[in-house]
Image 1 (cartoon, rainbow, N blue to C red):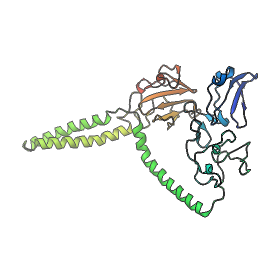
Image 2 (image 1 turned 90 degrees about the vertical axis):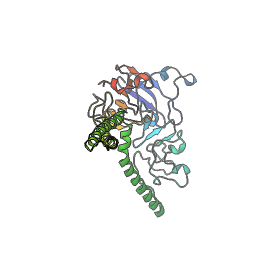
Image 3 (image 1 turned 90 degrees about the horizontal axis):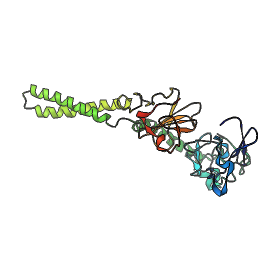
Image 4 (image 1 turned 45 degrees about the vertical axis):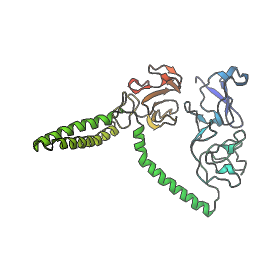
Length: 331
């Protein structure tokens, strides 16, 4: 994006046109009902439809992630391809007993995206007003509507259940994250083999010292014991990062690729490929380094994927994903 740009929106707040300071058209935008971009050449579209304005604020004016194509609605993400939010709403609080769609925790705009927008997923909105209640639309949070005591009891039970599940997830998640990190797959095998050999030698020495009759048994016991002991030690080493790093990874628990700034925060990867990514705190959606579960790395700079030499490439290009051993951070 170069210079000042001006955005023109429709009745839903979606960006439909971007112009420069002189009023010249930079790009036109058309959307499918739930916000997906139309094909630039669809229906004979030409001119500004095929250009790029670099604007991230698209459907209903929400910021769109350049790689996942999800729209950020302040408290959760929305998927235009699925026509729903990617995470659930608070149960019961915003349910409408007269409208079944109000009980759908993932629904967007009561499934009527042409008429309604849905700033936070809690209720539909037309020109800033909820058409069902006449109240001003909420944007991030809102007070719960009136519910009866049974609803309150049921909601309290659900909240407590979800709290227990969340606590369990916090216990299990570190192990899941560790299993998803790129690492040398032979780390544990080498540790157990080394322990088995050392145990066998110790068992042999003990067997010979006891007269030789127990040598075979003590060799076997020593090998198994050494393999088991060093297997545990190897597991600890691999989990700490000392034996689990691969290629360009630092030997640390965070598995931060070499050169990535220390202030870049590690966050989960929502692109469906597993792993995690390190994001620039000043521009997390457009500057980040993704580490996939298969060990490949992708750096995205200003919303553009880079190949191993630092040249811009398409995100779905094989050149955008390369082994960590070849990774060099491009500032």
